[in-house]
Image 1 (cartoon, rainbow, N blue to C red):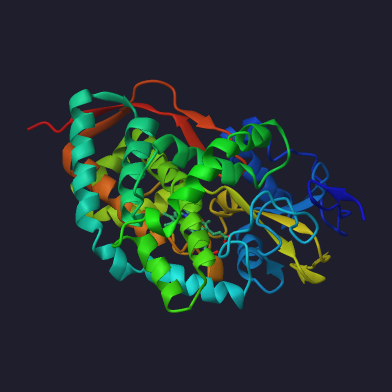
Image 2 (cartoon, rainbow, N blue to C red):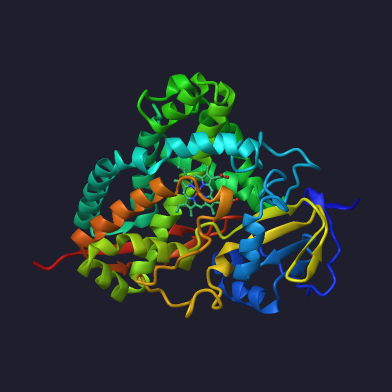
Length: 409
Ligand code: HEM
């Protein structure tokens, strides 16, 4: 068997166009929209020889592959590497990188800890933190919003909700970036991210221990399931690790992208200001429009067929969520940013059994910030160039200089 980037190198299936593109090219990672459009236009799937993978950017196929967990498994890794053939860099996630029936057990525990009821209790503290921070940024006028808003806010409210006794904004953000870069090819970007491991991983592991968590946070609720023998203590620690892997960089990106959207489309911010209750649908549209997780993989676990294409066991399929969320067959005028759209069915948080288990808390965090913006900020204006940071799975902002103008009284 020929291997490439930790998985079996397949040949192009019959009738699938071969496209000599590198989806991990930094120009594409920074500005992926022309790539998304061409990916959709070439067919339901393309074969990318550089990595010997299939990629899909059309909504129906991306959704089918992403949600049918029996044919397209997560247990063989949601990145380029096939865990059946190569050992992953860290013990796999006991929720993201497993299949039923094991997944059902761990998912129940983490879903209960992140349930709407559990998160409701956090809403007031999220709103107070958002109000305070937006007040400070208004006084300051111009700020670098990635660090001073998106990271500062998320790495305050989220670790407190989990119950971390000690927090470190830089390490939390870099850990997320590392986990998401690890899903891509063994290139300079990945190697640079992984080089941070010896500093960050032991710190994260320590933070996930029961004795380092408060008695009333989300982490403690997960450990309580171990007392009931629902999961082991080790699995509880791994689930807390999942919160820190998946809950920081994604939300930071969601908030950064929200500010970018409102600075780019000020008339849409005016609509939100006129009716702050639109915070919820506005975030759904921001998710669809920007797709913070641009792509994740599935591994084909049985010879199968999708849209007439025969696909063999062991094939890695890159599901381009960003491209599917701009598919005009699913979302009319997909390149129009419209906070009243209500884009039901978007894939930005996934769907099906692995659909984002943290979405309630992510929405609560981001809506608190958008509500504070709508109530307090008169205008949002770029104060310099917004720069996107290449990452193998996340489309994140690196720098976002923006001015907040006060409301005219
Ligand atoms: C804007 C913010 C967020 C975005 C865009 C996002 C996106 C996603 C996506 C696309 C998936 C599906 C993965 C797959 O099917 O392979 C997912 C799953 C997951 N997310 Fe999120 N996420 C966000 C916030 C969060 C937060 C705040 C947490 C933690 C509290 C979290 C924890 C998880 C976990 C643990 C999974 C795996 C669930 C499973 O496999 O059953 N996410 N997320």
